Each structure stands twice: as C-alpha cells, then as structure tokens.
Image (cartoon, rainbow, N blue to C red; front, side, top):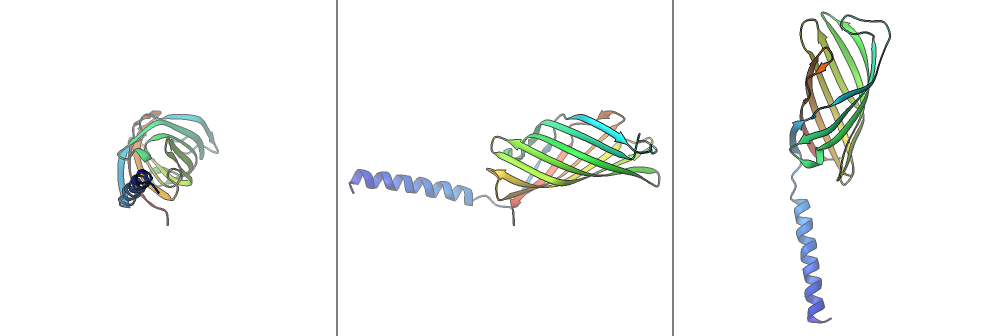
Length: 174
C-alpha cells in the first residue's frame, strides 16, 4: 500500500470515528420544549345525544398543525392528529376522553403514535382545557428513539388558543 493510500485510509477512518463519537455523545433522555404553531380543525363530526356544553357524546376530528416548533429540530415539523372523543358529564364539567392517531413528520424522519391520549374538560363560563399525552415511535432517521410529549392548551367556543405548549422527552426506545 502506498503512503498516499495509507493516508487516505487513515483520513476516512478518522472521519468515521469522529462521526460515531458525535452520535455517541448524545445524552438521553433529552428534554424538549416548544409549541404546536397555528393548527386547523378539519372533518369535525359530532354524534350521539347532546350533553351540556357539547352538541353530542362523540366527537371525531382531524387537527393539522403545519409547523410545530421545538427546541430540538427532530421534534419540529408538520403534525396531523385524527382523534375520537367520548364525552360524559362529571359533576359541573363535561369531559371528553379521547384517543388519537398522530404523526409528526420532517426531513429527518417521522414520529407516530396510534394511541395518544387527549382529555378535554369543559366547565360553563371557563375556557376549555385540553391536555394531550403521546408516546411516539421514531421512524426513518429517528428509528430506535421514542418521543414522549405533553401538550396543554385551551379554547373558548370555536376560537382555539393556538399555539399550544409542548413539553417532551426524546429517549432511546427500550
């Protein structure tokens, strides 16, 4: 092997080691924060008997957020949430227990949860509180990672208080 070939091989090997060291240097879990950006509600369908504060007992809806912005770019991007809520009367409040099929995508990959949980609490005279929890599996460049998040927001009537706040954690999938 010539000196030139040996040097080229060493440069390639050194570059590979530096690259691997950069990946290994990420410490998990990694906390992230941000918000949903402005979202839109689509394909809303109410069914069942009306309850106080809602026109039915079941809500099906798709929410699209074209630009979620987070402190870690891997959890920023466009998100879409298809959810179904079943409402019940609990004391003075009407509460929706919801399940969501959610996906967040960006240039590096995607995050998906087929069973994210959402709770919507409505109390007469107060803004509606929405709490959404999800555990997302990474795909593409995020394979082997899990993204857990907690979203809080509110809306009054048909006016939504977007953007909603997101706190979360990226960790290795075990």
